[in-house]
Image (cartoon, rainbow, N blue to C red):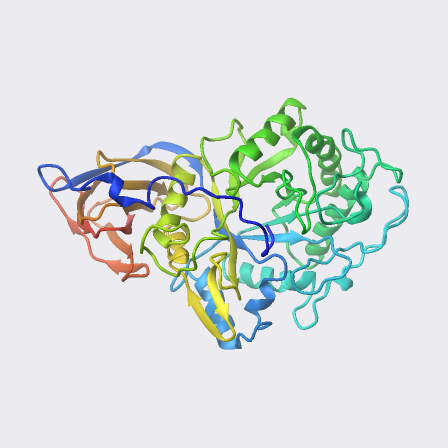
Length: 484
């Protein structure tokens, strides 16, 4: 969605917004809950956590709204640092379609129609420069800084094809790509031209020394909206995928295709089923979906990895808080959203909409106001995962009998285990965590986030039977990070 997009009723997963429904949330007769971790039971791979700075939001990080150089560095640290920030590892860029590119629009690399899909296009990389911020409306600069700070995956997604390739001749207000099922245009079939357009964008980044890992050609294709957008059902997506896939293969780029960034979980499920029925699933490296129109729920029926690539609180009351009264933008709410995405929807990555922006809404993790930086507790909800779980990790089994606790666990490639426990009750929960690597030379550290703490390091104790014991305050989240 663009910054001024209409909120579409994202529902909060789980029950974090209403902790009282858990009853007392008190532990059993012993007063202590046992949490069992089982690294032998493995689930989906973990690819990372991230966000976007599309629609020139990245220029705000570099001072377009008054942010100083010192605070630019601070914001980048907050987003990417594994020492004093969230340690994010994925960046989602927007592939532009705008002929003009004032703030809030993304520049096209082909601003002038060649007149026919069979004519030679004129691509213009230099024309995407945002004065003072560089190529691609400033996204290239941010991408380079992100990679330098540890980002491992770049996803580039197009909200729309250029206007002259669509049946409505407009980058906005939906419209369809000329040549897909049911869409016949007087100008011809533009599917191959659009595939060439996307591959050329990838090549421009390659010449800058950057490999884009995934490319998408749709964003919320179920919505007709006033900003860059393009409609598609599953069959129509398949019509284009069978052109884009061989074009990308012939380019020898290492980029894989992502689809379809539906506005909600069920909207994307419908498009995925359609392209599967058309026999085009083989073209995909990644299935992508958002959380707005319908919240993430049951896993998709696919053997491809799944990412939730955009979700945010776009309309709830403005808040930086961890927990006040359970509103949709609070940190505790988002901690539970993330937990459910991994544990219920089986995603391999979770992305918020915007990382940092000069907005007063909840659409960003970090809110900028001139040279003032406001860090929301939502950032620290993400950090509970992204600081301690890294690409290459695998989700593993974790369980307890306490319904007030929402949990996930991951084993990193280096065998470090990170367990996230959210206490949704109004009471402190005494817990024992069993199954962590707690050998003679092992170490276990707790990291606490709540109204008073932003990923604060906490001590834990060894208990009888080889477990780790501690207490998790009410309405809090704690990660246990254990190395063998």
